[in-house]
Length: 141
Image (cartoon, rainbow, N blue to C red; front, side, top):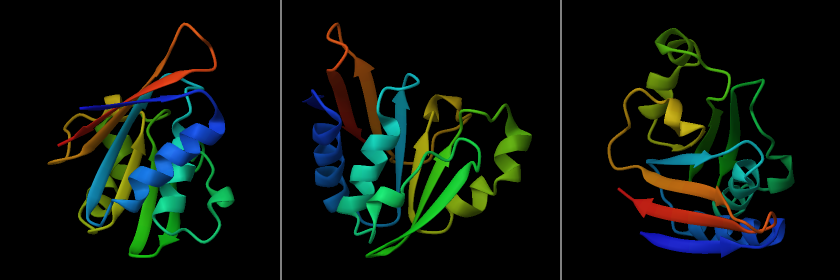
């Protein structure tokens, strides 16, 4: 497991970009963290590293549930499970098809998954005693 510390939004973006540059489809990234911990900021950095033309367009899909971006190696799906309640909700967003699409799939609020996909990259973002510092635990597979 790799540990990274971020003391700012810019550092979180850089960490995400660094990770994103090493990713190739198909790949599932599971994000864990409290509300406001920086998950969407990290996704913006991942998108930049994956070659999204304008990573500033990356927004939380809390209400749309799924956003798609064009990366240098194909489609990137950004999914937010915050408002999902059960199997019917997961089915309604087409999760099974998305996971089978051989794309990059980034899932916020992954703790709501009933069954983890095979060999995911897990990133857990923890708040520290210092409210501006985040601890990122990065676990591959």
